Length: 199
Image (cartoon, rainbow, N blue to C red; front, top):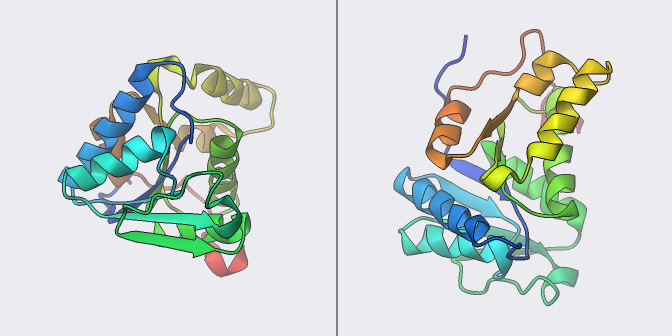
């Protein structure tokens, strides 16, 4: 039975590019506003540019707290956001993802590229394996993730992905609705929670 759970911190995976449509940046700023108003802290990749920068700036502008985590070698390439209150510089991409996962109560994918998908899919894999029991959601702006969700449905039909694990990936186009579903989330029945030390 789903039960409301606190979302104190949410990790958001998203692009360091702005994308081809202004709607992506607008959505990032709207998510930032909603997070701040709900007193949910943001954990993200620590960049000041693209969708990442829009999101972090919006959280701070609305009085929320932001933690950015960025590897040393990407400080210049991703334009580290020195204007946020808590910027953590780590040694590697693996450490970045591990620390983001440990700090967060849930995960959201906004539009982004390969890095966004890689980070989000690793979290989904850990959930499928029972390494964590935290909710994961996609904020599907302007149909950006339609091809991805179609592929996931295809993977179910072809026997490589269970219906239960597919249903555990929450998809919404409205940030408030997505966060509400994340708060009510419970992992697929029968999943054994292994704990993060088994990762």
